[in-house]
Amino acid sequence: MEIKRDAYLKRLVEHRGNQRIKIVTGIRRCGKSYLLFHLFKEYLLNSGVPQSRIIEIQLDDRANKSLRDPDTCLTYIRQKVRGKGQYYLLIDEVQMMDEFEDVLNSCLHIQNLDTYVTGSNSHLLSKDVITEFRGRGDEMYLRPLNFTEFATTCPELSFAEAWRQYYTYGGLPYCALLPTAEEKAEYLMKLFEEVYLRDIVERYGIQGEAYMDRLLDIISSGIGSLTNPTKLERAFNSAGGMKLSDGTIKQYLDHLTDAFIVERAERYDIKGKRYISTPYKYYFTDTGLRNARINFRQIEETHLMENIIYNELCGRGYLVDVGVVEVNERQPDGKYARKQIEVDFVCNKADERIYVQSALTIPTTEKRQQEERPLTAVQDSFRKVIITADNVVRHRDEQGILIVSLQDFLNNTDTLESTSSDA
Image 1 (cartoon, helix red, strand yellow):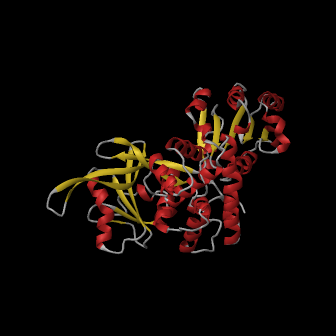
Image 2: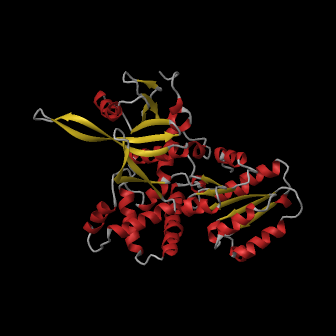
Image 3: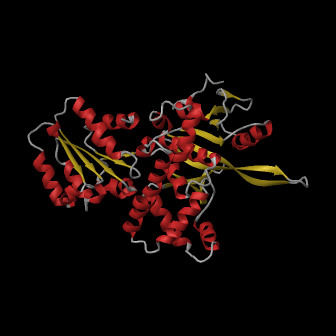
């Protein structure tokens, strides 16, 4: 079955022939190779590009081991480019080549060569690498399937059942196509241990693999919770028998984010207009991997929904932070005291900002007021939204807050941009 990744394919097509290196990166098994070597290649062939003008190099293939040498690879590429017609270079897992930055910069000097590469660590998006390309690198971060992409793999399911499958097993493409729950669970658990964790241990020479295991268990159990290395150190050491410093914990967390397994959301003081250095939140790039890490225990829909909304917002191009706003609250003794309350997500895109609350259900007036409170405390003119799994029709309440159902939000990318029709 072919899974469409139309939004990502569209971006590649739009950047075709722009004299830049197109860099597709993301967690292993999220579909980078499929996007480049199947969907994009198919687009090129259908648009009239001859097969002979598409140069394909998959560096994770043992048969191409010699091409991991930068000089050998560059010689191979130059030999393939014959004549003056346009050629297309597709390189998979480019980080497996030493000095790949130099090779890609050399490709920029071949006027009739349009270059596309994939990679599985965030070094490919670092400022150092982009500097090496002298402003001639286009970045594209490919995420696992979002809900609408996932739903195309199981059109026979109702929204409720597809949603349950999605928050339980996530959006890695191969997993989505497996027919049974047992196969999905086994695939995810093996993938975490044998690919992701093994990659990190080998790449960074980690000696105490058991310590990384323990840290993963802690952050997996606490998705959506505020934390920092010092807090994690206390949780780690309280388990008994194992101790790890906050500095080492920070290094391990950086390794996990570098491999795109988790993402860190910073805290932002909305009224003070400044970032708060600590604590912060970690969300998993794929909820199926998170669940597999803890053997599919703690399948808490509330926290998983928050994680998925975070991923969806990032996938739509927003820069997403965790918001903090101070309120003056009356105490039982009648005195007032300052208190910080949390806005789940502060979403920025260019000059646009949206505040978003995730609420699994809003069964009572009291619960609705609780969810509205951080949004009304912000007191600015930017859009404010509550996303709930309740079956509600999109509408604005008396506070001007947009109430949106989870189904509406996931299935319609323009939901948060709506203004007049939802009043």
